Image (cartoon, rainbow, N blue to C red; front, side, top):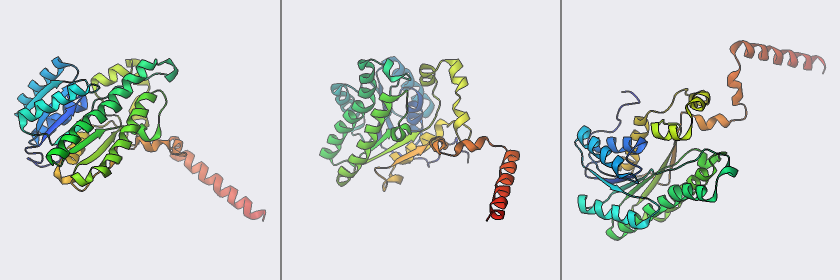
Length: 296
């Protein structure tokens, strides 16, 4: 069994209806495909209807599963309510939500307008709690033990320059995840999150980096496992968290980044030291210790 193969057994998500925001492309599309293979009904939504329509057709052809698509700007509550209503009408109920919609600018913060900051925070934070709250109310009223998965990022903990609006918003999502996990546990509603490292998605990377900069600042250069993530690795974890196999887990945030976030350790720069240099350092330490003893 390889890390880029499906992990869960067939039928692990049978009869579950899961809404995935930002489900038309990238990781959202990959999660949708794997969830369908595991037996789920899938609802994908984003702002671009033509992309959703193409993705839905492709997913149904490749998996044989049931896909509903609906245009939705997660900043607008009436559109969220419309997606939920259509999902219930089509599949009878909704069991899960993956908050995957995102936006980002890589920029010196002082270059951003107030509107640009609002755009990112509104999509990432406001859109996430709007959708979560709307479904939470429905689940509590209908006594459904729903499941929410939030796609976060490692810099929600550490912070990061040049992506300040995203970092602020993602940090808020983490606080919401843990807070609601406790508050809604009485209703059997679970909330968890994944903090991914670099999982290349063509559209996102092209928007964020010019080609020459993408090569110069290649992510592999700072990831201890020296490779990028495969989409299947993330979808395996996502499927587990959406399944009943994880029914005892809530309020958890799982980092999946090849060790990237660990690179901030104070002495991690020593990874650049060669074996020969380590031999020299060791000899220097021995000499220093010998000289210290002589002087005592």
